[in-house]
Image (tube, rainbow, N blue to C red; front, side, top):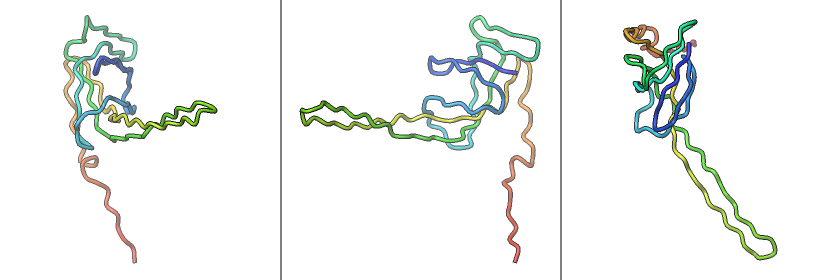
Length: 124
């Protein structure tokens, strides 16, 4: 099962469990995001194409990370003693697609095991 959704004038093709890099969103780690602008949903043999959006289809995602790596650009002109170094830092958000919901489907309840963090037992 996969879907195509629109976010910030870009389109993303995703499937459940996939990690996607989006433009930066001011959301805390672990928070859930919902995308309603679903353009296409493919579930097995069926294909639903929206005009422009598939009504009632949603994509649920969880914020995983806000990485930001610095990109360095160097300008150099030979024999002129000209060197420039400029840095650019583009923020973005990484999300994990948790569910692709078809029209009429409800959000599956989170299991109790997923809510509770794993505890470590110390052996002496």
